[in-house]
Image 1 (cartoon, rainbow, N blue to C red):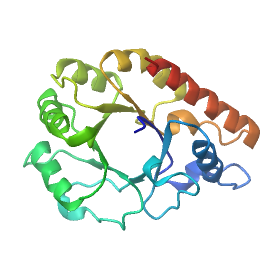
Image 2: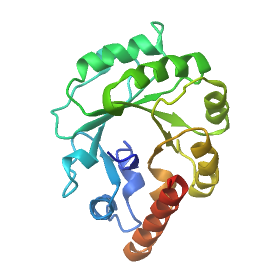
Image 3: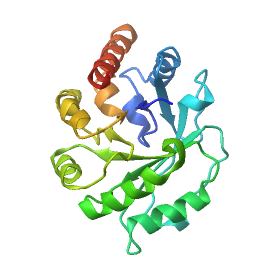
Length: 220
């Protein structure tokens, strides 16, 4: 299963509009559909076109508590959810989430806390999951990288999130991210966020080149 995901599930529709109000998401969907090894993260209410079900991930709205989780009709084989730290602890929060999200081949967990103890607990859950069914999506800004380096997460599967970074900042961190054990990325604005004013051909060429840069970084 792929470890490279391009995300277009951001809640702000304005991010996807060109100056003439063209929506860039359809072009990105088509690009991912024809790029081997890549998947797409979409909102549960969005279609994912010609992208195969196993290469589509439903990006659920972030939650503070399990009670806020709205379980969508399942149209993908993967699901992603972000959540704040909770008084019951992140691991307990995750176990409750997994009970509400049965049947997905992969569940990407995006914790917003940044403590080594929290990551270690989540990594232990991920390491015990079947076939990499739980994958952590971790921020790789300075704070995030420092936390990952301090935490004992072993071989638990995780991917890097750009968390609002620009491409130059994110791409410069990729070698360090790989060295810390990341298996790939789940990235949005860092790849497409600055391409809205470019023409479609230039935009897709830029996105494609950045995807290839990511692939080269993680090549074995």
